[in-house]
Image 1 (cartoon, rainbow, N blue to C red):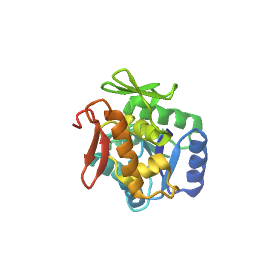
Image 2: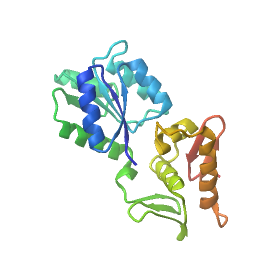
Image 3: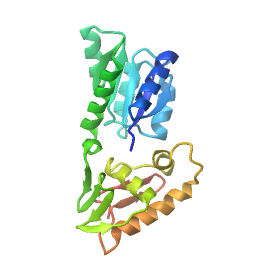
Image 4: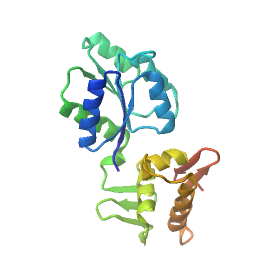
Length: 230
């Protein structure tokens, strides 16, 4: 599943360049041109990483970085600061505000992509794994197979994508809207209740044989995959 990156940049030409190159390298890209728009995006779908320009209108990149870090739901999201300010004191300020890495403009797209992949791997080791696990549950990405306690589990394509999405982000709660965007795609014309249908199918398949329920339903919030769900 393609990692989702939020690019917060007010320079249109650079934003277009980043979107083109990141899409080509296998990332899904969301865009924001200022801090307020970025926060709205974060509330809709928590990204796998943020590329954040220092100099933004309304709310500076530094202040936006601090706001992201103060929110418990966003605290672990990797942030790379993009800036023309290359002095050591500026790098220290950026890192002290909560950024995970710091890239000075102009930069090599190849280096930026490599750094982006590195911070995502550190935050989500499951992204680079061939087999995703939670307790006795295993999802083999290369063989496209799922098993629990050594027994094979048959899942439909949508349930497989749902399970992969959850296993790559264990314990995190996602709303129906967020799951629709991530698993079906932003442009899919699918009703919210469809998510509930596929969650029920996934839960039934995983729990067959009397296994502990790993799918946690959070009232008025959504769903999570959690080893301590039941």
